[in-house]
Image (cartoon, rainbow, N blue to C red; front, side):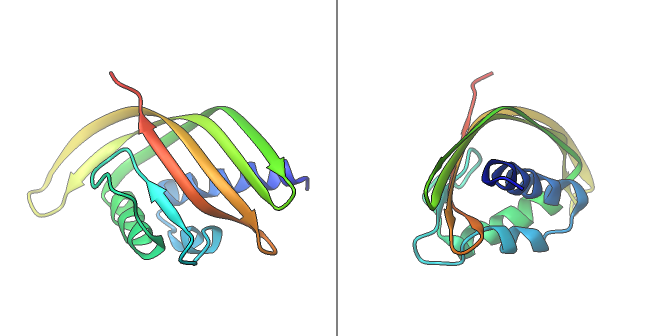
Length: 134
């Protein structure tokens, strides 16, 4: 498998975790290291470390039913032991509040950038989502 294919597979694995609710791969594909960071397009909007990112990703994905996503126009650039993947992301689903037994449909499009390092496998070391205005 080429490095570009590996990167695309990791990006897909990230979002498939939300679809399947199998969240274990999120920990396997991201670098558990103080150098990890992330920005998201939903609050909280501050820069997050690995532990905080994992907790928020898991919470978000379990709170969405009927989750679906579409990755469009992905571009992967590889530089020795680092890589960048940029793409447009469309996400849809139902945000569920189990305490109030309510749900709200959502649909959002974002620009996304994932930064990877090879240590020895490709791992996400940073990602940034930026919501595209309605």
